[in-house]
Length: 517
Image (cartoon, rainbow, N blue to C red):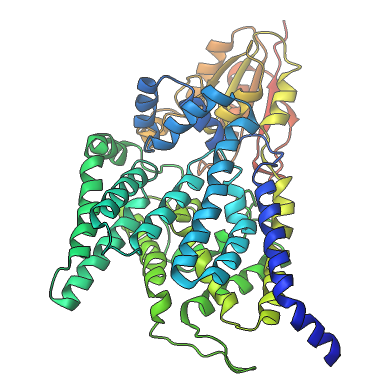
């Protein structure tokens, strides 16, 4: 046994290199290989980005998002088309670039050995893999934030104006990509203020860093009126503000595929979570493991990790507090702004084990657990829209399709026949694009009974298909809509598709109300 251990120990550096190469190769392949249909957010992004640039901005006014990703997707689709694989490939390419930036950032902080391990962890991290396959802006946020941190920790004594301009550009890009970036920028600014307070002076570096933040804010001013309108009229009406327990459980989102339903936990997810948290703690507090059986923790936070700890946990604290008291929601994808620096802390948690054989064994367990999740997530169907489209393929021409709520519309319409008439609850409009503007007021202005009479009048002597879901914070509203449509028409109801909550992230029912002469 001792001889075997010596052989394993001597081969560990080669094993680490091989495992890193395997993780990166598989991670890149996984970013271009999901089999799922586009779900709500993806289909909605594609629909918005498919319009002219002027219309795109108008749609975003009602959507609640900033424009940069949509502009990029607009031009990307012009070059590569609108297929599912094409629209998702933009995020895949950006995510792969993020691996390179993560390597460069880690090497600048702690050296090349740490950088290889950090890149391997990020390559197979379920969070990174998933958003590398989703037609949304979160891979772009990861890339931009990592680039900003890379410039931020550089040597500002050399070419400070150049670094300030680069940082200003990245701050501006972040603000035009996702609003949670505001919290990262606030934390960076507060760190500057703290440093000025401690030193009682303002160095040249601090001046240029402050200039970058202020300049980025000025370049964001043209969008500020739209942001303010979104803040007042869109927000996140589809989910409540985060409760205080989310200040503790947000980290779980990094080790699960984002298509996982909360009602389908598994043992390996729990093991992955415990290991991930343990490595985060080691990455934050541990010093190098010199003794065979002893890990030394520095609860003052070692200098080597202090900046990333401030960025990660400061951003999450500021963001969650702002969301809680500002009555906007939090979902794990918003944490993309700190995803790469958090992964770097995990990688450091592996590297403090010091000896190659320990690093290899832990990295092997981490990689195995994450790849298990990635393999499962590759085949998860994010939307039941494909099955809905198959049901509607058998409908009579010009049948009337009513969707409740309109949030299931973008994904269904992407795959459904175009010769049907589509409408939706609560606005009774075609739901190609969801209008979030004063969304709660739109629900208060109607009711299931109004839906019954409206659909009856609009459908006339045609078959009615009601595509509906009981989720989306509406509780039993859509089920009541189906009931009241049936009462208003006097038609029998036939459930032709059953929602599968455990099989699809975005599940749907289809109820047929046939017309009989």
